[in-house]
Image (cartoon, rainbow, N blue to C red):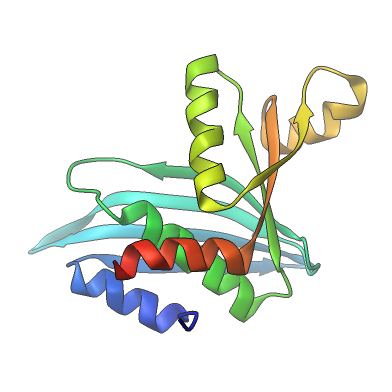
Length: 166
């Protein structure tokens, strides 16, 4: 199975009647990324179904993913399209080979669901981010406490593509 590129992932979205767009901005050494999936409507703006925000540093482990949200009705596959596009972009347009994210710890049950979701994608726990002084920089970056997780971009892309092709 070959790993798809962004054009193929955009075609998968179009085949489902969806728009997939990436907004990439460069500022010095930081690249910001926003991946959006929306449903077009005749004569009206598209309806936002999901988005992911993050940033990348020019390092092999420089992709940092901050916000992932899927909302609304008929969102089957939207999350997979977002993850696939994000990982394909990292592999094609950046030196990043791995990504980090924080499974935020707001409510315990929601935290456990997030951890399971990210693990199914291929992310692995690296360390807890809590109230210790050494965690303050990470809490400032991620906006809270939780479980810091790392995923290999190629492995995550392969996992979500199996579902998208299935």
